Length: 237
Image (cartoon, rainbow, N blue to C red; front, side, top):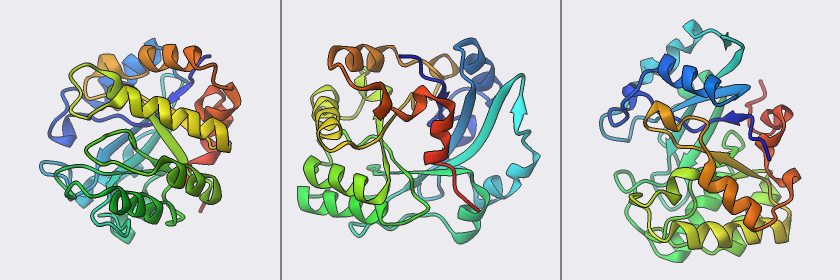
């Protein structure tokens, strides 16, 4: 299974990553990516970029050294109704949007609260990727979340960094296995992303690729096995 794009990455602009945009792109090319997406945290995350960062995406080339360049955002889910911290202006400037729950932006909730938050976010038509729904600090009902993803045509992320032994997320492997099994059961689409905070991790999916092979996951459920999978997540204007 060859994965052709990585849409969840961070640069020094995030305030807690350590490489530049060009360093990330160069490493993505070395990994054989056909498309690369930068997705800095939206403004509710401490230390991240201002709204002006997203407004000026027009200066970034659409292709660099043969790689298609996409400019997105990782929105923060800020309440249990699934609202996010992105203004209409930010939404109008990005190519795609990931929505995730982070401890700096929303307290750890109950299964019912967290599930409602993710489903609420999926009801927002501009959000097409749910980031790292695999953290036991935010327990969810996987049946409800995956069924909602199918209903709303939302892509669920398999986050390679959640399998890192130093990840702050809890029970990543166990939860990702459950997520994958439910996606296969209900026919939900998934995307593998690195969530890179250092350039060497861009386009590096070794742990997740091994897990997908172990679980014999149908390639057709993973959208980044074909460059046309970008059509599932790019905002139509």
